[in-house]
Length: 265
Length: 158
Image (cartoon, rainbow over all chains, first blue to last red; front, side):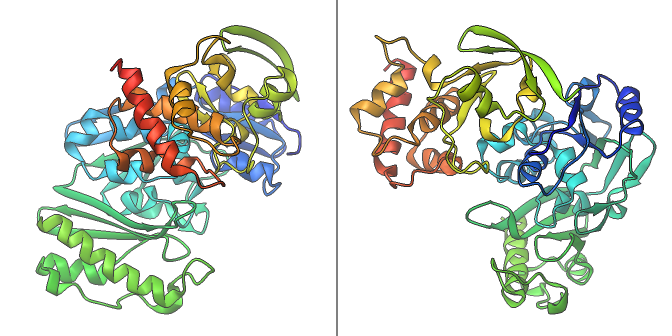
């Protein structure tokens, strides 16, 4: 790992000031991806700005039908949170399926979303559930947040502070994990708001996306036999050593059906 | 500021040191403090041989900076017992032969202890699921699972 300056600001203003006065800075959350990337010299920031001393970014609250999660809440904290488990039950399966215990102890929801790994789990929930991403500057609709592989709508020095989840009528997340990393080879998040069905897919393509054709078919008639097959173009699917594009396309159909079955249970 | 002063409690003893900001926790523990019970296996956050308890929860020390855990309490395998009395989980690993070459064992024991705190009475499936973050290349999982199950009983005081 190359050397760098290390900072521990205790509020957002201080963090941004340090960012602006540094050559090539990076914000650090749990570090479960960033530190590994730095060890491999895939990332070599001049300055690392550790945000974990900013306590206001760790809170979780339920405010009038909306769950507000601080960006620095860890996957494990989220999986054990009473409000979340009562109102958006399916997030427990999502958060306990990430990596392993040690990674869930330190990895954060904000880090996962800001990193925008195409096979990460949280992005599927961000798109499927009606969400708003709060930063130090503005609010971004969840569906406008992911702009490409490892790319988001966040500007250079912008800090993701909270995520607001509008509580759905139902939510489930189901993935086919890579057996070594537990990243999603394909993962499906299904939310309903009354009859309105929202489905997001992660892992299958270069960035997470909504499956609009499947959504409209299920919104019209929520039935296992009504799941349209092969709706995502094979050219849009990832094709790598873990799975071929055809295999991923098939996985999407299988996992959507499993999610529908989860709902009908 | 490429160096950093940190104050870390390791096994009940406080260490105040000036370190390089890119020093990994596992290197701090092994090279600076000279506690070599926590191992470096894969060095990529996967195998769990470097696992320590950080404020009571499991952490892979190869994948965090020492600076990140400034102010925390770390327990390594050496801190679980004095030379006469083994921790109940260590005892169980000994009794059930939960090791072959022993390289992964410190991490397995640390991982098991943090797990049992959370789930005092796990079934076999839960133990196996929990061990996804600890690899044994001898593949001696059968006895590791038995050891953790028995260790859980001991920790519950049965």
